[in-house]
Length: 183
View (tube, rainbow, N blue to C red):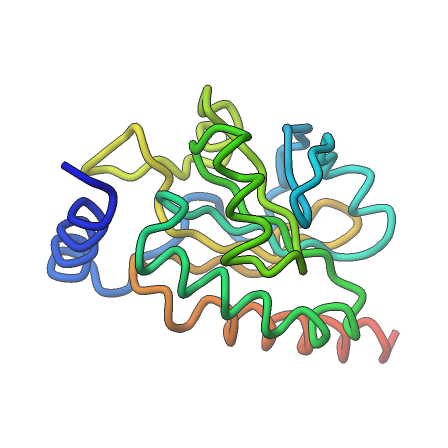
């Protein structure tokens, strides 16, 4: 089954089964630290969650497969919102089971060179975030997290529909920023 047919089937099945579900890790839990091969604007490097958190919050989102309709649309939406995330001091990183060479291409095309995508071909990160797709465990589920510099998960959202992941994570970051400014 090619990626586009797979994505359409997974999206239809996922939406029929669980239009909006709870994310795998709970709010308040500590985000598991990880380092993974990643690509930004076609350049390979090692992404480190702890190094990124030292600079500010991180929006970590898992997606099923690069170059599928929903995943490309979601990446494009994250790319278009990069300046809004940056204004909130946040780093965005997408993670899927695609190999690094696929992520290199995806980082320049769908991500428009504006944020990094990491390869988790061995599913180590996906397993640590309990983000495997239940119906197809070789793929990541579409799950978004907002993680604060102290590694606390302050927001999570799981839905195979890519439509609200960017809007919801931006809103969670804005709420967190308001709360931290009051202190």
